[in-house]
Structure formats: structure tokens, C-alpha cells
Image 1 (cartoon, rainbow, N blue to C red):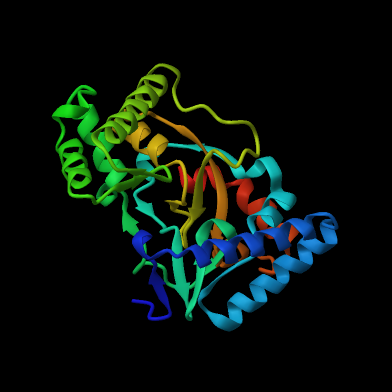
Image 2 (image 1 turned 180 degrees about the vertical axis):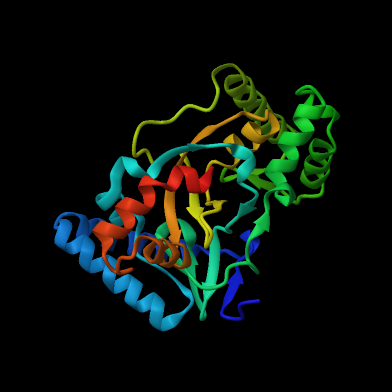
Length: 270
């Protein structure tokens, strides 16, 4: 267990966390006006140096990864390969960080990863599939309605489900998405689109789901689709180090490491 790393439960996320996150992301957008190859290399090398010194942490905004690699980050993988989830919020050395805002992870993250079958949305998808989309006959529906009656609203897709009507509307959207994916498969939202299911590549290249896209991924797994489009948004520094050794290049050489790493990322994640 990594004592420097803790999970922030959804119920414990504060408005101040969101405000600080928006300020940090605004600063990153300001940097975007002057981004160039030299700045990308500098930011990457600085982040890797900090990661090596600290040993645990989240570094580098994903926009720098995208600026360097673009469409190389868009790959197709079997959804069954994604068996772990990285939480939305983490506390690292007392500082709260949203995992979607970082492209590099350093340290032992095994203690904060969650098995995907234990997540609420995955259970809902499995029950819907098992009950032929009759959501009112599922245990998860009954539990949500009971919680609403007690005044304990369930939160889904940034909405608070306070009434039976709210719960019904949520499951109607879920069933409609099921029907669409069953017919059309899971479609890519466009190369480089931030709305695709995001993944991190772990220390051994294993795919880990990042925040967002949980309903689409849960449906793809329930339907046992052979492959889905995902976007790589985070790399574990141990994975980069292993690839650097395999290629015989310095781990701080972004051109040699990241481009050649992700050129083979489909086989690493598949």
C-alpha cells in the first residue's frame, strides 16, 4: 500500500476542489497559445525528472501528450481487457488531484485501483442485460427508488436522482444507449476527441479506465463486444522506463520514447 496516495470518495469532493481544478486547467489553456515541439519536450522532461525525484505523483497535463502524439493515442482494444478503474480524485501528499488532468502517473497505484465489476454502473449494466432491459425488475432500480424515498439521492451523470421519475429517466437513457450500441457498436467520436473512453497504460502496458465513458464501457462489456475505440490519456512512468530499456534509448527522449511507445501500444493494450 502506498501511504502517500489516497482515494477521495465522491461524497467527499468539495466545491473548492472543482474551483481549484478549473483554475489549473485555465492556466494550461493559456500555455496552449505558445506550445511548440521545444516546449512539449521541456515539459515532458521536467515532469519525468520530478517523477523520478518524488517517486509518487501525477504530472503533465494530457494536452501535452496530445500535442506530441495526436492520433497515435487513438487505439481499439477488447473491452474485456479493461478490468481496473482509476478513481476520479486522489490525494497525493495532502493535495487533491483529478486524474483526468494528468498524463503521467508515478508510484505504486495498486492500492487505489478498483475492480471494474465492483463499480455501480457496471453492476447496473449487467443487471439490465440479465433482465432484458426491464429495469424495473432489477435490484439496482429498487435500491435507487428506495434511496430516493429516504431522501438519499443517487448521483449519476452529474444528476441527483431525487424521485422515482428521476430514476426512471436515468434508466430510460441507459436502455436507449444499450440499444444504440447493440446495433451500431461503440463509435469513435472523432480522432483526438476527448469524449472517447479514456484509458491509462499501467506499468506493464495494461489498460486502466480513467474517468468518463463508464456507461459506454459497461455496456460494451455486458454485450461482449470484440473491440471498442479508446483514447490513451495517461502513461505510467514504469511503463515508459520498461519501453526505454527495451528500445535502448534515454527515458527523457520524448521523440524516441513516446512516439515509438505508442506505435506499439495497440499490441501492449490488446
